[in-house]
Structures are given as structure tokens and as C-alpha cells.
Length: 184
Image (cartoon, rainbow, N blue to C red; front, side, top):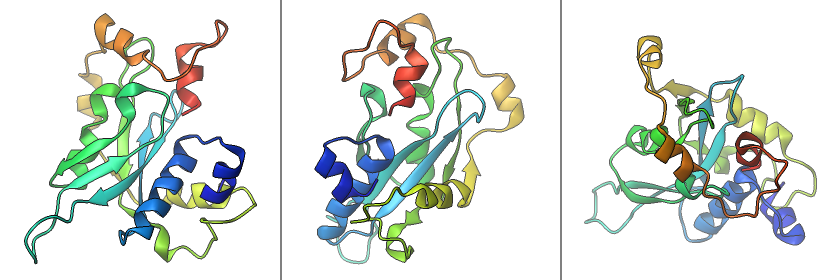
């Protein structure tokens, strides 16, 4: 949904949250940039965050990257603008992105996706924005780890998995960790 529609109905998943943050940042003079964090296709779901670059440096110097994210999980949220590159920022999500069995699933990240170049009315549309989601999903992505590294990954241990269960909602007794996670 567009930010306007999501705010009207008072509901947002990670994608809508990223659009709301992008719109808010755009109003402050930032480029509206998204970053798609892709997972193993068959086991987990992607996560979308809004990128921003700190601008409190001397003229001519680039700032550091940060991210704003909407999620029910405490560990996949906001990132301070301390990352020199998009890759560094994307890697900051790696260890927190795992299934209930501890399997780590983050595999790639998109190049910054500039919403100001999109001809879809992402700010105010009353229609669902599935085409925009598809465009982001098909945009160029950069692998985080090699196949050899994937084979050598250790699973998140029990204490990490318990920390990953901290959510900002009251889970129903019938929902699993993965189904809560997929809700963004």
C-alpha cells in the first residue's frame, strides 16, 4: 500500500513502513531510497528498509549510511548512520536473520532503489503496489556470501534464537515464529 493508504487504515508491514519512511525523508530533502534484503527463497521472506545518508559532515564529504525499518522483531529495526557502504549496512542484518531452527537465511541485498525515478504513484495511490514490489524484487541485487560460505555457516544458538523471538506484538498461541516473522 501507499503511505497515504497505510496511514489511513493504520496498518503497515515492512514494505509500507519503508515507503512511509521514504516519504518522510523525502519531505526533509533526502532521496527516497529502498534496500531489499533477500533471503533463501524457499524458507524465509525478504525485508525492505529505507536508506538514508547522514548529512552533517563538512561540505564535499559523503555521509554514513543508516536505515529505517518497520518490523515486529526487535533486532531488524533501525540502523544508526555509521556504515561507510551499503554492503556494511546490509551485513549488519546478517546475524539476526534466521529461522526458528537457527538457520541463517540472508543472501543478498539490492542496490539502492530510488523511488524518485519510479513512474508509479507510490506516495498516494489507492491501488495496491504489487508492481512496485515486483520492480524492487527484480532490481539488481548483490550476493552477501558464497555457496562455500553458506555450507560453513553455524546455526544461531539457543540464546540468539530466544532473542530473535522478541516481538512488538502479542503472538497468538497458534502462530509459529516463522509465521509471525513473515508478517513483517
